[in-house]
Length: 288
Image 1 (cartoon, helix red, strand yellow):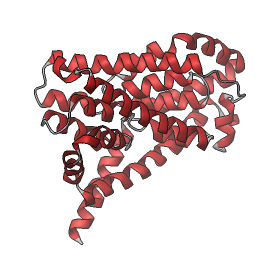
Image 2: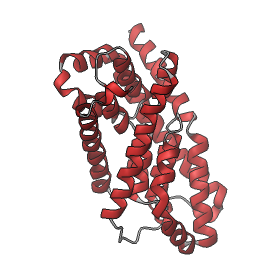
Image 3: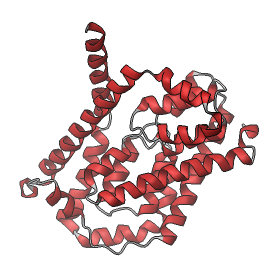
């Protein structure tokens, strides 16, 4: 009983501080969206949508910043149709979560780290532009729809409305994060390691699936297995390409189309597997 209580307390602490780090990003994202809705409305959205042609380029580089705050912001902005679907994919694919800190702490050389990070950024940008080229949004979703869907009182003012949105998403992330931390605590990271090492021919699939878990432990496990020589560089990238941090959580919380959210998640998973396998086939690991 004491062991169970220890795991639950530790899980809550970890989930709370992980969610706490996202508060500034969430608040600024919703503040921006509220300002656009209240001051310029659809006109501002149209201007940003037009500039979205180069969105994947910026999204790819922003996503590479070593934390998942931008993936959370990207999901919120996409839900309000401020950024394009391609930009969202660029952010998600290039997000590194805990990969960079883990590699640095394990003494991975700067050259190797830059090659891995650069590859994620380039793949994210390329996929983003292709997605925007193939998929043109024709719906009438507006920034204000998020306000209506979440039942807030926008008439209370920009700041209060942004705070309400932020708190709502924060609680959601905290609850799911606590659940995932508890599961990881009871199951153990060694189980994930054993699954990956026992099925090397499926390592890309397993790594990509683990990467979808919106928890920093997922990227830590995948990265450490690569550093330990258990999985290939391609499998590691499969896991980190799908590892969008809490971005997917925010997407499911703010984007009202469940079908679209599931399709985005499935596409991210398939892309992570496919790109990782291709990188293994071309000998990417030998270039590091």
